[in-house]
Image (cartoon, rainbow, N blue to C red; front, side, top):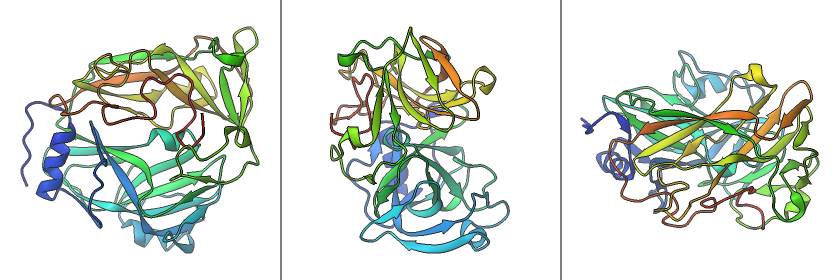
Length: 341
């Protein structure tokens, strides 16, 4: 098919619907009514997966051919499957791409996935990189899943990542620095949460179904500082409110590691309308998913920890973030949707 956009940019929901109708994006099962977001498409697990002993890139081979070199056993997701922390899995997705000329794609974890420290990356046949899908790609999609802090329960249809489609080469409109809020004034003075190492199982399809006290330790800063311990996972909030104009989208990217031995924000997509008055989200903060590396690190209030990169949409989306209901519009410091308030 031929796809024409009015200008280079990220494709809004109505353009994604057009690609689905034209067969550029297909699925093993009918698409869910809420699967297309304002500027992204949620991807769903199928019933086929593999436990592997190492991550890999397929290079010149297909994903399933390369899996045979590292497979430990196959897994069937029907009825639910437990993915153990510290292990690596590959699961085939229900969606398939046949990208037209001039359209590329990029994937990122959904916010709820990053907030429970499940590391995921999109894989394609003969792919040289994770998460990026080249113009003209015609083939299946796979997801590498590596739970880090908690073991999780998944099923066919579970949504762990999302796909953003781009026409041409959209310009970077703006890059904003994101600082961390360690003076958060909520009840009890809590500035963040640290994942408990020996917690139970998180059902990733169960909303508001887990007691946060079983999985998280609340944190209070001393003198506007917080010590990050190696190998631990933290949920923190941005100092600044985040606002995404209705004709733009943004991706949060980690800052240069030379400023600190930690990584921020697995889930990087912000849809148009997030944090805006028009979508009833003014004052929304960005939630920061922070994992430290090899050494303890003292984090200070206001310290820059990430960047927000803004890009244009090809046109205004027919709906904005949060208009159909959202767990994260108007958020402050907030755990994932799986936990009771």
